[in-house]
Length: 416
Image (cartoon, rainbow, N blue to C red; front, side):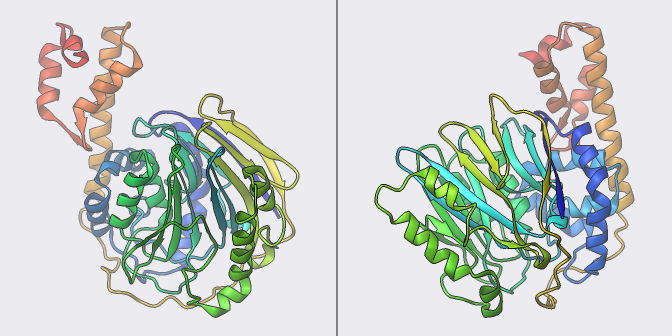
């Protein structure tokens, strides 16, 4: 089995490169959604309402992505991140602090079910380097403020009402700068499944938050996690992925005298942390190493690695070879929970059109200003764009002011 890994740089608003990723992966995601049926899958209106309630700052980015997918109704629903189908990954992660601050994790999953993309973005003014999942979400990453984050599956069957964890992690990296802000977001936004989320910032402060759909979040000082939350809730899963064995190993190595970050990171490429059950969907697809103080990220495999930084991010392609694999069988039958079911939404077509015309009007006006004032830089044009379309809605006052003053000093009014 192989993974086509790409490191892609699009440091600004989502554009043609993100759209290419969507065109590459959407068919597979759509097939996945259809294969799960409509159980627990809410309609577009419900999903958008949840996004606005819990992650309102993401709304302008969400609308821009909807424009890039040309108003596809199923994609628009999926990109809210609300109530995706249930799925299981593995993973191990650990934090080291002191002289070297480091977050290292293994991502254990099926090779066919990973996008294989590392993205450098700046969707909301903050640079983020992250491993992409679900097109808009991430499974681990770090922002330019030095906040790093990653997850492990919590080892529980329960599925509830909430967001997919990759979407929550994306939100944290976009809008949080330190551990305190990250924890506040994590305990506020509901997760539809159980996960252990570890965050660390450049001061060395770290927390691990145990999220679950059926109980309150638990904020801990755990420096490592595998795939359970204290007690074993799912014995069959725990026996399969050896969560207790991996947890005991991490506890032992982190307790060693004079342990250093290099030794800890190297241990993730060896048993029992490194897994080779690719055909069962539990193989280590990559090891990520985040160093907040240096602003550096390293993705590692047994035979190769990719090193990146915010100052020097390189677009890279690598073909990663794994053992032969096949799609893993389902571990359990997902039970129905109380959530709005998929119905035909009379507002869906209108929504798709609204996204298109509002973005189009904005781009026309920004392009007109750029032509009228060739010396205008991209930062000033972005300020104009934000003034015209505020929180995803066109400001008619800005439109009227623009056309009445076009060419008569209006450029200076929005630069100031």
